[in-house]
Length: 277
Image (cartoon, rainbow, N blue to C red; front, side, top):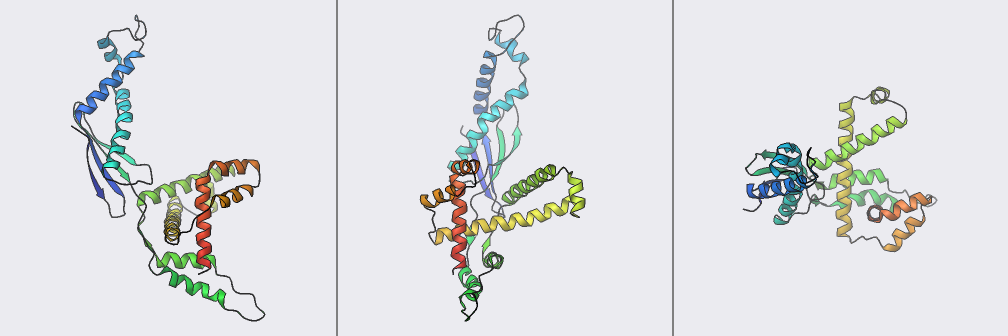
């Protein structure tokens, strides 16, 4: 028997994989883990790894064996399933074990998602209504520069994208964690911070949820525009950005994260493209 699986696309574009690991594979892996554990087991009265197998097995922590078996089987089963269904996840999966019976098949679900589909609509027409103001030349006056916030607001209104909830939750958790770190650095408790800013935990989470939805949608919309307009970042541009680092620590950090730096530069170039429409 091989690993079997089903795939389901939820309304918010989250992908649900239901994966079954057959009992024979579980048994084989279990025996392998027990054998490896036995080699390093210490039993009173016997040299390391020399105690009778039956005696060792009686003393082995079954829960720990199960954990080790899961560590080995779950990643393997997940990778095989992703290849089988020809999907390209962009986040680590959320795993939930559904069936965990000794001697039987093991079943678990994995929630993940791919890059959301973006419909750009007639975004150029809408953006040009904003940027047209900067093209009006009035003698003796500087051209009115396009308002960045207005461009972003118009862009988001003109485009559509269904963002998987797990991406939003992940970003909300990141924002909350960042806030907690900042609050600690200020020497305050979270309660003191909430009182000072006149918020409740629920208000804060709702606020970050809206921000996460907006930020993530903007990221994917800009990515789609960059692909459509063939906006790329050259190695020369990356090196120029690295050379502008304020100190050696920042320079090394940029060197170590070139992919992220290239992504940020591409976003900036895409925004410049929108300003110039």
